[in-house]
Amino acid sequence: MNVGDRHYRTIWLNEDGVSVDVIDQRWLPHEFRTVTLKTVEGVATAIRDMWVRGAPLIGVTAAYGMAIAMRADASDAGLDAAWEKLHETRPTAINLRWALDAMRALLKPLPPAERAEAAYKRAAEIADEDVELNRAIGENGLAILRKIAATKKPGEPVNILTHCNAGWLATVDYGTATAPIYLAVEAGIPVHVYVDETRPRNQGAQLTAWEMAGHGVPHTLIVDNAGGHLMQHGAVDMVIVGTDRTTANGDVANKIGTYLKALAAKDNGVPFYVALPSPTIDWTVSDGVKEIPIEERSGDEVSLVWGKTADGTVTQVRISPDASPAGNPAFDVTPARLVTGLITERGVAEASREGLQKLFPER
Ligand code: MRU
Image 1 (cartoon, rainbow, N blue to C red):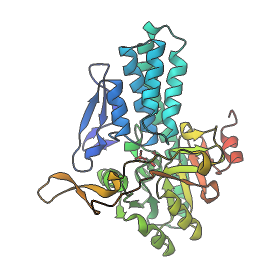
Image 2: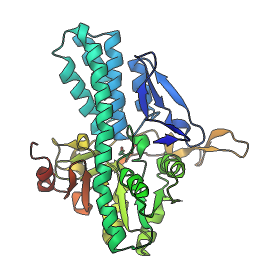
Image 3: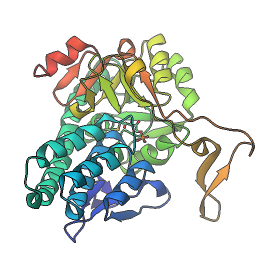
Image 4: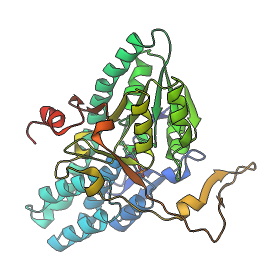
């Protein structure tokens, strides 16, 4: 997508041909900065400390991390150590393990001397594939939006609520939940997006709102607790969110607070869609609540908030007593029964084992 007049992906190979450049998301929306990652340790830090984030982008960044690692040590031990180092960065998004496994399966049978070149090639392919998957998700989601626009809201904007950032910043390009929104805008379908701020890290306020503003998408930032009220008053026509891991049964792990939105949507008859590329499906897991590991992050993310002061300084402030400990589960699981449909690159699946298997019979 564009930043100003220039097209950016969130990750690209540096002109030195071996390092990787990413948009450093810690500074948005106040500053647009990029950062160069040169070592596997640097890549692990960028993922763990959320310079890059969002399940698909975490996967692609890790794939490049494997390539960078192969330049330093392409032995079997080096390969396994890089896999471990990158895998331990964040536990919930399955795209991370998917990408690391794909890289290891490709590289292990190759002689070490050939591994680095093959790894860079495959990482670039995974990045390109992500763009294609998101574009297809966009087309499939657009069909739903068109239908709602034509049947429920002729001539009026379709009101979409989204949580966290499942936008282009969370992927290589387009985003998952935002892809149908961007395509609807391109197609001239009027939309308006309610952007949940998404405490504690405010990915909605900082990233999704920045994306919407940058692409001229009408939007309103709301506190996380406003969604239920808006749904009760008919202000939301549909919810679209992303996911970090979806089980073979259609349970959906996503940013903390997603579950509450799904409950409110169910109670108010608002369709609740989840947009996901197939690498986000964990076919080995059935019961999301019991089996998906939920990342517990530092309580500082709850107690300390980033913002810009009147003089333009970007700084952190404490919002709670120094002595109050804070808990920070980063994701929750929305059971399949609350999900209207899973928007994938192959079409829209019912959120169930049968629904997913119909679209992915090879699994
Ligand atoms: O902690 P984050 O910012 O990495 O969490 C991101 C989300 O929860 C997204 O909704 C999810 O990764 C899907 S991104 C297309």
